Length: 255
Image (cartoon, rainbow, N blue to C red; front, side, top):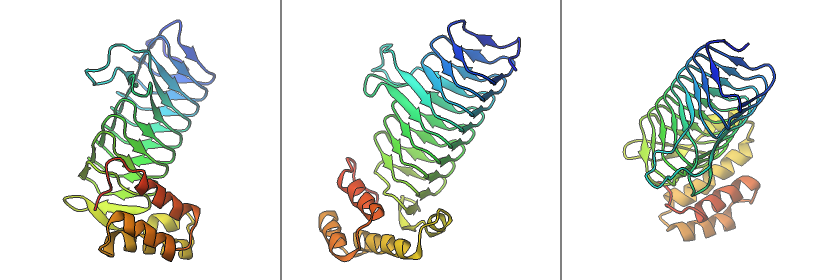
């Protein structure tokens, strides 16, 4: 299961049933769980923490130091959960003193050439398209779909269950359950197909639609629109999530 042409530092911790191909490099201070497949020419560097059942394709680099001039060798980590597919040439940098770790959750697909920068937090069940680049300290909530060649500014947050059009670039937050697209990027409706596939009821989808109709089409400012949502839309965890997301946005939301 482990090629004799791979290099594994003697201090690295490797779990059971791990397949490691030729020319893989695994550094010291690395922990890899069970049932992982690490294909040829992948590089797992200092501070990497990899869970169980992941598949890492050739050319991926996990745990490289941050591309941040404020980094001065702090002891930080790049943490990956379970059952992720990390395709060719994906790069996941470890954290800085800001947060101490970069995290990719579980059950994600990171397609070829994706970059996850320092201190980023990617949730669970996300699909990230080819060559999408995420800057430092971004947050992506669960079940987001980000298409190919998207550029995400540092400190931005993407809400859960969104669909972002390929080739988009943005420097503001994208609230949950919506489609974001066009140029410049803007609200383009709610992600009806995605929500139905995830089992959202027609009533809940309608409530989400009415929430965003008030936020984006009423002509009110954001504060007044959220107050109107509280009056007009039946509350549920999903509607509360939208309100909380927008109220706590540090960069403001796309319009």
